[in-house]
Amino acid sequence: MGVRRPWRRAQARYPWGDELDPGCEYRCNIWRGSFPAKHTAADGCKGIAPVNAFAPNGFGLYNSCGNVWEWCADAWTVQHGENSPALSMDLPSGANRVIRGGSHMCHDSYCFRYRVAARSANSRILQPGTRASAEH
Image (tube, rainbow, N blue to C red):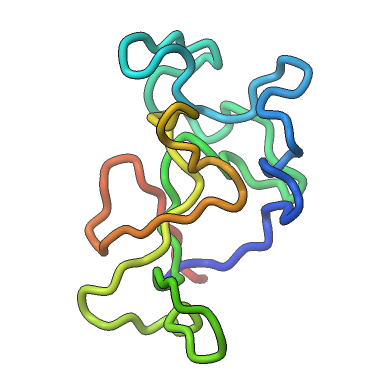
């Protein structure tokens, strides 16, 4: 089961505001350079970064976007409302879950999933570079 966390600013493009690199300070691990030909690793990371490679957000959470996908407890749906399957933690066999946050392979030319509002669907089979958390 996933953990629901209110760690993203709903009004902003990124968890820290609307600029990707405010004051030329890197805040997340994404593909820097020309995808897929040249990864400059300008943010100091080529591949998956250590958890504390960037400053935490206002809730003290590290890597809240970029680096690795986050596999969420919510069911993926385009149906919203009172009877939405996203409201249930018990997913039927074969159901897709929401993934969010983007990864170190995301580049704004094709994958802009490190934005706060971005959501995608993924099956129960995790792909490399996916984070999942458990309830405690």
